[in-house]
Amino acid sequence: MLLRNSISRRIPQSPLHPRLSQMASHLIHSSSSINSSTTGAGEEKDQLYSSTTTTDAPGVSLADITKTNNFTSKLPPDAAFDTPLASHNAPREHLGPRLVKGALYTFVRPETTYEPELLAVSPRAMKDLGLKEGEDKTDDFREMVAGNKIFWNEADGGVYPWAQCYGGKVLFLGFRVIFFILFYFLCYEIY
Image (cartoon, rainbow, N blue to C red; front, side, top):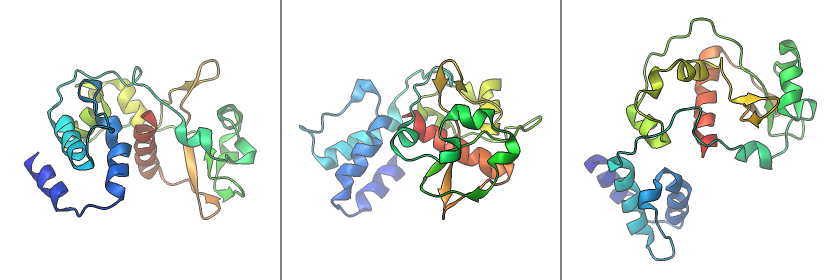
């Protein structure tokens, strides 16, 4: 905590600091929420760091954590697979790298990985995401970060994996890169 606070104080104040604090405010648990109209940007930033480093909330399971589709609900999808269902029902070979025009992402399911091994998990990241202690030891967690489990079904919907277009092409990388990207975006889509 000392290191985190000392680093934050060396960063010069800019007009972005209040916005960055606002964007990171989802990390603050409801017991220590901030009212931005009565708190200055500097106090808000200090409270943000102290609340995320000292909170001992029990957390929730991966299945129970609130998930949203902020990115995919507000930006244009690939016309070929404009819904999760269209992508889910498509043969895997049709989802490969290709030129995509007028879209920022395409829905795509990861390739199945057999016997995945989870090598390391950051306890700090688990705490920041609000996941309960020990959740990283569950089969659901291991299967999700390997890309074998998605929290979506035809009846209830949910969060479906997607790939972001890069230079007009949808890139499908090797398994190790894909699971990292999926986990990264899922973590940020959760909030």
